Image (tube, rainbow, N blue to C red; front, top):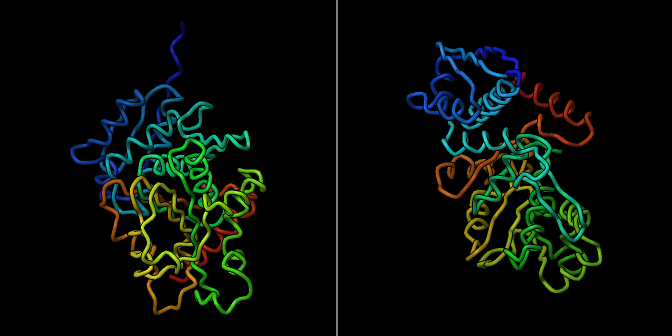
Length: 320
């Protein structure tokens, strides 16, 4: 059997400081990558040379790209993040990967379509609390609802709780016409849409009526402890710091919390700090709590959305 063709690739890093953080203490992360992918890595200053067969070198390049993205967003890398990225690059896109979400009621497979989305799904599976930050179109809410429906179908939870801050109404929902569901519906429309794609609309209606699916504004979470549930907070960037603390402490026995948000789209008054921005910085070292950053490379809507997001981000950076 012929040997696989070999290739060599050099990655130029931004600085020596980036190299130190990327390589890990005593080059621990380099050894993890080399052992997992079977490549030869030569680190010199702020460059990395990767040698090996073409497929393995390509996978190693993807790992380094994703880890560099993590560094830009979090200023640090944890060993478990390296292990997760290696697993995703090796197995994340395979048909029978554990990253797949099977929603049995609709007979369809929900699959992460980017490395970032695969990291997100892995984080939701392995962590009790997951904070996902990213721009529009990256699948933050859709994958969160898919995970919740999957857990419900597998009887790992008994309820799904969908929560969203009604910032536009100032949370003063009593002034709006209709019952609670009618008042909050406009703010939860994206979550309804995701549910109706994964379950029959009639089943969604029955589950809401029997309280298996609960839909509530953030203000209605105060004073509660919610067990045996997947609790999703959408638009988390529009919570205040006290609201985020209140929400995260609602988690009871056998529950998961997923918070999604776009920290570039905060609708709070300028004098108020976003609870999600605060939580991302405050909680990053807590065990069983994962923070996942998605970016424009993870956008899976119309291709034009990715270009629009990039254009706005470039304009914002130009002003800075």
